[in-house]
Amino acid sequence: MPFKDLREFIDKLEKEGEAQSIEEEVDWNLEAGAMLRRATEQNFPAPFFQKIKDYPNGYRLFGGSLANYRRISIAMDKSPDTSQQELMEEYLKRKKRTLKPVLVHEAPCKENIDRGDEVDLLKLPVPFLHEGDGGRYLGTFHLTISKDLDSDWVNWGMYRSMLHDKNSVSMWATPGSHLDGMYKRSYEPQGIPMEVAIVLGTEPISALCTAIPIAYGVSEVDVAGGIRGEPVELVKCETIDLEVPATAEIVIEGEMRPHERKDEGPFGDFTGYVTHGRKSVPVVHVKAITYRNDPIFTMSCMGIPVDDDTAIHSVTKGAEYLEALRASGLPVTGVCVLAEASELITVVAVKPPFSNVAEVIADIVWGTRAGRHLPYIIVVNDDVDPFDRSQVWHALATKCHPDRGIVKRKRGVLMPLLPSATSYERRHGLGARTYFDCTWPLDCDPKELPKRVSFKEIYPEEIQRKALAKWKKYGY
Ligand SMILES: Cc1cc2nc3c(=O)[nH]c(=O)nc-3n(C[C@H](O)[C@H](O)[C@H](O)COP(=O)(O)O)c2cc1C
Image (cartoon, rainbow, N blue to C red; front, side, top):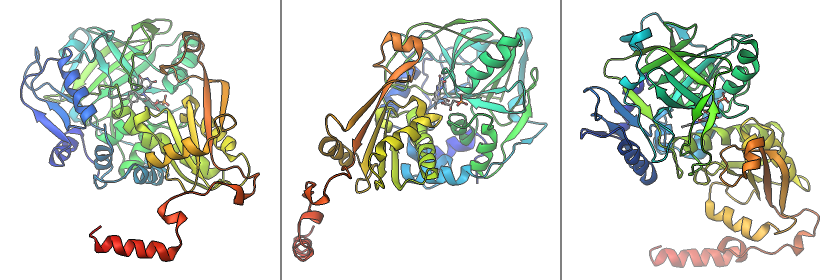
């Protein structure tokens, strides 16, 4: 059964040792961020802060809800020990079926409604997450909902949002993201404000799906329904023409006005670095806030991986690459997005059907929506398990020719937060990318290829059997 709301999910996480209620008061100013960062780096349970300095009893903070595969597995109603690979397959299977949301008329997120002059974002325990951030970050684990101007397509995305004052936040969306496109290519040129809802504290699959690299025109809420196995319940907003998850903890209704920008950043992000300073980005003006009694404010505290971003994307982006490669008919045996490499390296295993298959693989992955920002691809033979890091490192070190095995594309699309990018590249969205061909070339006599020296490959079966039997006798 899918979780009805965040509260049910937290209960389950606590039972599985994946979340911990913390009664001692925590300061929203850096302390909550430091606690969450430490928990994320050490894989401690997700902290559920019950008492926030300067805030009334009942206002709570919860962070790191999907920061590892165990929590994603629980969110998907799978065994907590489900592997990254199994999660990818499950995601692909469930994604095939979409379920439209259902509209309800009464909703927990309407227990409290503040409009107009009553709006005060500072009533929420918005955390100041990292030393040096540009401000308090309201949106670091949330849904941003907006509607296409010319169709009924509704986009959900997770775009970081920095608090400015009691009724405005600035929002950074990657160039080319759906929100960025809707605002800059449709609403803004026509001088029309874009209505936006920022939603915190949904059931976990809505949060997961808001961060998936889905195609233009597909509504994430339909995918979330399919992945949950039950439609998401939505309710109409009070002041804008959008619908939001009914059981959400907090809903912020507002609009992005055309031709308005405010500063945003710096911010410590999922690459493990602060990569840029202040930027001018669009602003959301808030018209209403609706929230549950004793609302739970959700957050992530990104930095050195693995965190919510890299855990979620190593499953969902990996699944999208796998799907695209399978659709091409290539005999790909596995795809692994390395979460610990900030999702910037993807390993693909293949049984090469023709020479230079690595190039075709790289072009397919880079051609996907998620893959356009990927700087590194490692292609290995099918005898390498792409999820086994030591096998991957060994293949890279031994089978990738230091010259012809490394293929660079000098003018690709930049992942804007790539720490190694130059300021010129960042300004123009240009970035180099590289693939490492760690497959044996097909244009040589297989007999000339170096032989692998492993127990299974170098000894006759008879000798292996004897050795195994002896080791068994010695207790191994
Ligand atoms: C915790 C977290 C934080 C994220 N922050 C941002 C962000 O600030 N800006 C952004 O463009 N994408 C961010 N993303 C990634 C987007 O949510 C993701 O790429 C999504 O697919 C974008 O939606 P779109 O393809 O509909 O534009 C974040 C993802 C996660 C999980």
